Image 1 (tube, rainbow, N blue to C red):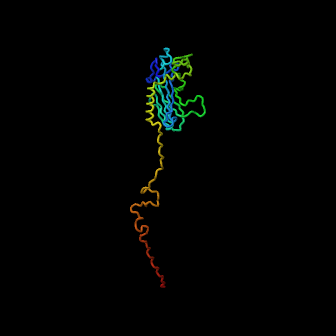
Image 2: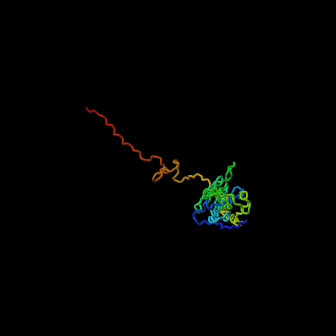
Image 3: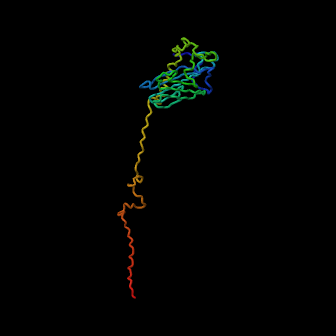
Length: 279
């Protein structure tokens, strides 16, 4: 269903580094959050999570506007997480702000980035809810400047103030249904038109295909120990190495191990002279 807005049209353009909101004047508001399991073989192995929020129109609020009259600059954040491949992709307004690949067994994902206006966005996501119930646990949570998404006022609450602070649950949902949070169905009037939803889905699928989100990265082959190849003259076997003697190899010559030198013969001693006594 398409909702006709009487206030200024929302815009996703970011034109200034000035702060986008003031909690006491024009707070940030939530539009909706959707989650879907989109794994090819097992649906639960891939998650798509989308948050839509906006910065309320300061001028409209100061002029007394309420609810949809105060809608302003709006944005969407999309998380795609494949538990099979470990790949995580985050888009903001259709543009990539984060891509990483962790271990498929990793149970937690967290990332943050800064948008125009020096506002810090942060996502904390868990692969599965805890086994034991934990009060206040959120499997997927978006933070803006440290504020959880679920604490942002809703559109129907914009422009309502009490005691100087923003009041919640005091304006009826559009189309009737009372001011309590039980009238969630009427709040679906703020959903995107079908054409825009389809355009968003095509954009997300294009990114998923580019990154092969469902396909795990190839496991690197094991590196074997280097093989030592013996080369001539480089062997460490001393018994098989040739003797490095300058010139000819004596072991290859005939009778190389024989001593062919002429023996040195000592000269014969002079014969002893007989001792004659002529006296």
